[in-house]
Image 1 (cartoon, helix red, strand yellow):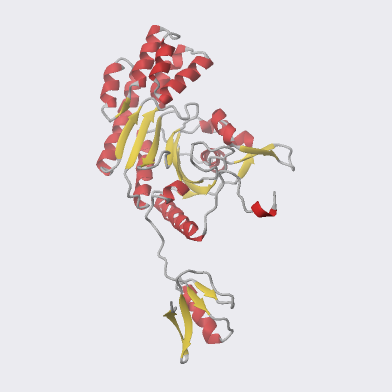
Image 2: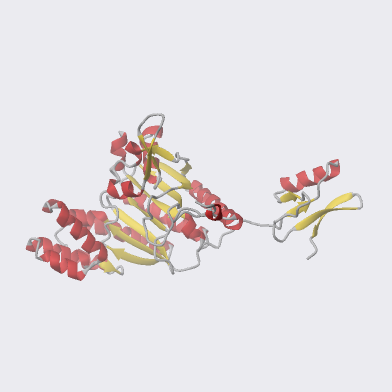
Length: 389
């Protein structure tokens, strides 16, 4: 690399300059404070872990996007976290090891070898909340309600849509069909893309009853009327009916508490099928092609850490949310103070800083602080005045 381009960052890696960094930090603090009022305790997982624990139970998708390297001290493989959720599960299962419901929240940088979604960066700042120890639909409703409350607190003014589905429906319909791995992959892809031609092609490869279920499921996405259609189509499937009941409870809560949030039901959503075990959801903001938050139920992950605990939660991409948030911290103009060691000057500077003001010392080279005020001596007192334009 020549000296002319040493400033270049790797593709997909970005930085936040002072104003955006200030706004993101204000957003982070506000959302974490909101989580605390709901009983979620803050944890700070490490940036790297052994891949044995970082990737366990999460399948090939996370493995592909995790940056790995060999630990020179142990010789074992380390990974830089691409998702903080499994770390929270490890903390709940092993580091805390409590019984009953445990609520944890977190915020931190992540790194992806390749972006998980087209058009986004590889270094999201992830803020999330996880609820362990409850398998009830009330727990799922709590985390979804918390998520929407956080977006409301962030001042998102663009239209918000909650996209929701249930992994258990696909599982109930197809888990007993013993599909070959390659056929199952094609079924996954066809459902995710909602591709009519692919589904028609698969029909010729599947048993008639399996093909019929696939065609029915592929059409079940859209408005909340999807639930009634699904109830009629799969009337004899008890597990499917229970999943639809859970979805109805969530949708009723969201309609009552957040009437401005759009609702999209997608029973073909199989994101994280090998990871999620129940409700799955994502939040989209109008004008964005990718979700600003994702979540769902993942009851099986704790078993690999010695405690098989039910779990549900969500993660927000703070960088993506920042572009739509209107929340900002109170920001008074900075104050530029002269150099000096006089007791009165130092006392005035200390008092201003103690009151929350930004005070920068003028070192004689100018101060790059944008619109600023000046601390000047008027008579025997130091006072703040507007800097002349």
